[in-house]
Image (cartoon, rainbow, N blue to C red; front, side, top):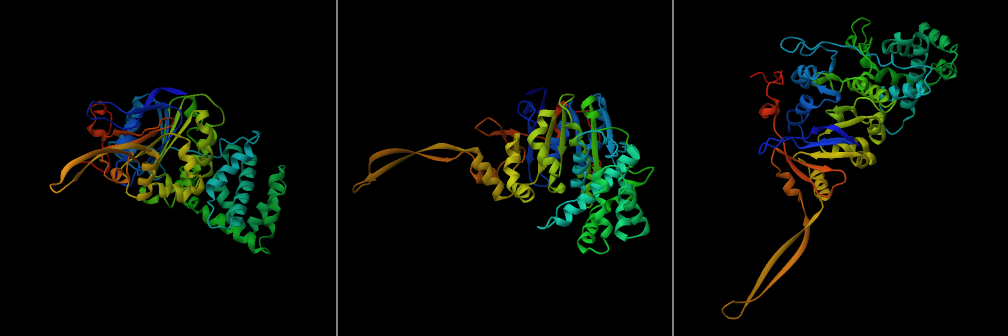
Length: 442
């Protein structure tokens, strides 16, 4: 399936054209840190593409540069900007809110599964023994189902956090919460919460609850859960809006908070994927995930690579190298690349990535000619020609790829393409469409 608009993958300065892609399959870009992923790819795409877009934006740099242009393209533009980055002139980025619980309907057949996906986003499996992480997820599912059934769209993650802390403290309030949930008409709540009443006698349950406390600690920050202003305490929009009319959502965190608050990103990405793949059709959505490794292994993202393109959701994560991707997704990493219609590489900085480019680029035939000489005066006697198979893109070639080039593999084609790329401010077609970069104001 093709889109009516081509997604730019760079820029050819020699003829002023944009190498592009117009299929609905996913994309991925792999380039070392400081290699220009934002300036040469993410910003030009954000300035031109009419799709709805969901953009993970470390430092708010992309939002500051391209937010005005998204408005001019007729988009409804929203900024999940809990720390108020770039709120002053000339950008004046606002702070919108989104409550991931508000869109969950207890009457929907996928209700418990969708709650489970949010629990997976909140609790990251750490270590080889998953029991405590799984039990912590189970507790979160129970509490979230209870809150949504009881409070509807007013249920918040801040409420969930308060219940977890009360149960962990084994306080009267915590035991009262457990007793109340045991009266819930849904068996997943009433039967599931009973085991946690024994938290004082069972060290394994105490450890699991401690895991839930630790891994949801980011919710103690009022930037997320303040009842009036917290980014996750109310909703200015619904993620389904991206399918219903052109909408851009920037998810913004300070760069030094990307790891500390990665669960905030995981939560929003999971919520968006669950909503946008609920039904096919609608406006096409492009999800650009810069610094994708900061998300760690995200089950909703892994699954979406296999099916979301059919629902009009196109994923585009950005990685630093293949070792990073393999470390996080282990045996799944090649399947993720296999589900991409475009795999783009900048000049690699590691041998694993260089070797992969070389192997995927295939072989070509190299001809060589030799002459033999003999006799007292070394006179020419014969000439022979031989052919051998050599890599089309040897690793040493990719290591020396010019910084304004990228190697692109399109699904269904055998040969790689060497394409140009250029910083957005040097591209004549983009002149006047962008605002100043808050990190380079000269």
